[in-house]
Image 1 (tube, chains in turn yellow, orange):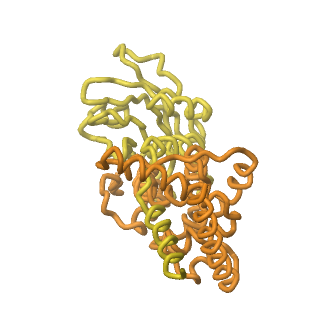
Image 2 (cartoon, one colour):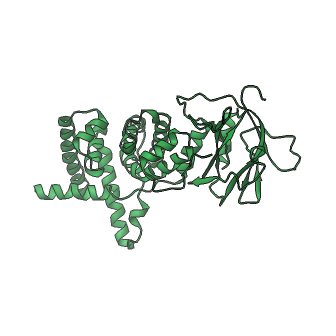
Length: 168
Length: 189
């Protein structure tokens, strides 16, 4: 009787130990929620113009989102802060960050991916910069969570970020 | 720019990934999420008995963990720390879920490759197990899953749950007894 009882529980355990597959889309939801409201850290965030966080959440759902965030350390030059740019683009095979800060050269700020989250970091001195994402080498995307750069003379989508306390 | 992001490295250790996240590399966190999604998902699914609730608890746990990453004292044991967050989150979620009808999700992966008759047997057995598990009191179910399914030592369970080792041993024992009784009842239905 005792052996049979133990065998019964062992069967239950074997059943419950079967792997369970959770929808991988959960990863995107987690990262979108994080990106929409980054964790408060010990470091303080300098003022810059990426302001509409609710917009970011909506953009993430659509598969494209960017945030800019300083590192605790990482300023390479006096007067500049390092900003990380993140784009959620699960379908993309390559993404580069291009802007005034790198002469719009895709080779200078390639983004690396993990699970469809593309990221790169650039040091930015105080000032106003236009930028965009170049997806798969051909598709320009503005940052849906940042102001449009209305003065874009190239006729392609682009956004603007203002870094520091005196630029706007 | 000189700081390597390294988020494409799926083999980076937990400690290394936590270090990167702490220095601002959000992308590194997605590697941790992917690494622990299914491992923790199994516990959440069995504990809550509902896949939607489980995914919600899982998502919330990952986000909570990210936002309190500074309190992860031993990044090499990130998984254990995250597990603790999920266990607590499941307690909260479980209290809400208990008020409504429980639904069970059959594990499609476990059924793949089985013959039709085989599948029917497995589905029936899976349902029987899930029903029996659902009848356990939450603290018994929690102790049983942590001990026998997640294979934790009692000391680790005590750290996760805040309960004493003696109490946990008692809960596991009672859970086993009750499961046996519920399964036998099911046999005779």
